[in-house]
Image (cartoon, rainbow, N blue to C red; front, side, top):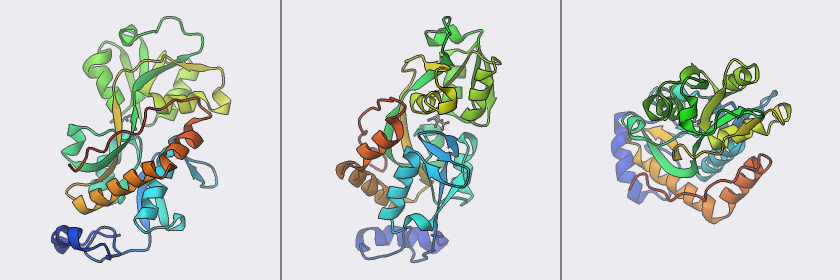
Length: 274
Ligand code: GLU
């Protein structure tokens, strides 16, 4: 699914209204065999690559559903690892066709990429050790050792407003924070509750951690796409609507978050591209 160059932009717009029959996803008729999708590889419940190369998680299921609606079967999907800090770049450099990676929609990111969706609503929360008694609210984090991930809204919120005086360690991925929290190098880690619940429920972490149960922000997950690709945005929005209507969304939530006892918000209304 290569974006054809100059012609693509023009053709994409023109074909948008005409081309129910067009087979190419992006427009311009330049079809390719596979679709490449950016997901997280280390977030249980959202995007996880197991040894041997099996992918699982809510974002993986959503991405697979979207790909199917765009005409790509599971064997035509190439999943690529994205980090919180490189999602915009992966899109801008054509490394992936779209990103489904706990990717919150915000204006800063929208200066560089576009989104379809949202398709999920999470809240920033804290993961603390099961015996932790000193941390009950965000301001308790000031002067505590906290971990989050470079390029995430979670880290940004801590610095901007939640606990500017916390000693914040920013790592490349959340699984690295979990290890540091377990080793007592840190007092807490922070990101979306959807992600934290997945770590807390992992077999090897049972009984070790708890979520503080705070709603420190609203995080609306969108599907990241290249800037200006309104044709793909429209198609993905249609796929996301269908996914909710046919019951797939609820099934993906149950399959991926059920074991973690994570109760998600209802599917949010689609607002991008309006
Ligand atoms: N949803 C937040 C974000 O997009 C945190 C999760 C993540 O880093 O992927 O920054």
